[in-house]
Image (tube, rainbow, N blue to C red; front, side, top):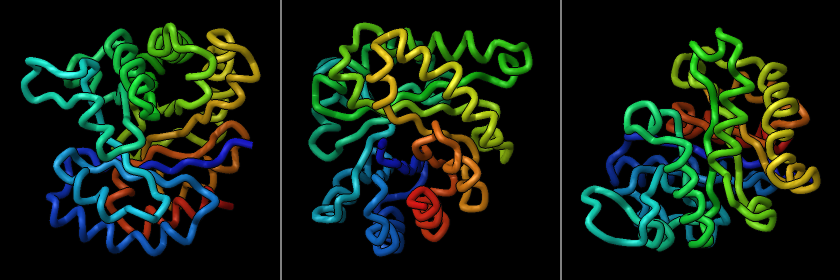
Amino acid sequence: MRTPLIAGNWKMNKTVEQARALVAEMLPGLQAVPSVERVLCPPFTALMPISAMLVGTEIGLGAQNMHWEAQGAFTGEISPGMVKEFCQYVILGHSERRTYFGETDQTVNKKVHAALANQLIPIVCVGETLEENEAGRTAEVVARQVCDGLKDVSKDQAAKLVIAYEPVWAIGTGRAASGEVANRVLAEIIRPALAGLFDTPTAQKIRILYGGSVTAANAQEFFGQPEIDGALVGGASLKPAEFVNIAIAAAK
C-alpha cells in the first residue's frame, strides 16, 4: 500500500508573517489526519520560520525549487544543502518553472540527482500543455518527461521519489481533468514508463500525485481512483479549511 501524500504548493504567496498565520490556522486540522503524509511548500523566505513551527508535528516541509550545484556563483539560486537545512522535500520541474524559466527535462534530471544525493525527496512534476493534449501527444510528452527527468536514477533511489502529474491546461484554470482521465494517464503512461526505467515492483512503489485545480469539492473524485496517491495542491493550499478537507478526503 502506498501512503497518500498531500502537498501544498504556495507558489509566490505569503510574507513570513502571513505564512505563520496560515500554518497556525491549519495545523490543528492537519495534525488530526495522521494516516496521510502532509507537506507544506511555502516560499524560500518562510522556510526557516515554518520549519520551527512544524517541529514535533510529523508534517513535512518542502521547497518549491532548487539549483543542482552545491555552491558557487549562481546569483539568486538556492542550493540543495540550503534546502536540506529546513526541508525534507523539494518540488522539481513544475510547469511554471518549465514555461517561465526555461527548465528542461535535462535540468530537472540534474536537480533530481542533487536532491537524492542530499537525502531530499523530490516531487517531480510532469504534464502536457493544452496544445499537446489536443494534438494527441499526451503519451509522448509525459513519457519523455518521466524517462528523461529520471535518467540514471537507481531502483533504490526511485522508490523514494514522488511523481506529480499536472496537466498544464488544468493548473490555475479551474479546469481540472476528470478523475478517470487522470487515472488513465497514470495507469497507461506514467507507471509503464516507470516500469520500463526500473521494473514493475519499483514502479508500483512510487507514489504518483495529481495536480491541477484540486479542491475539497473534487478531491474525492481523484482519490477514489486506484492509481492516484494524493495531490499537489496549488490555490486551495492557501485556504486552511480547504486544504485540511483535501487531506481528510485523501484519508478516506
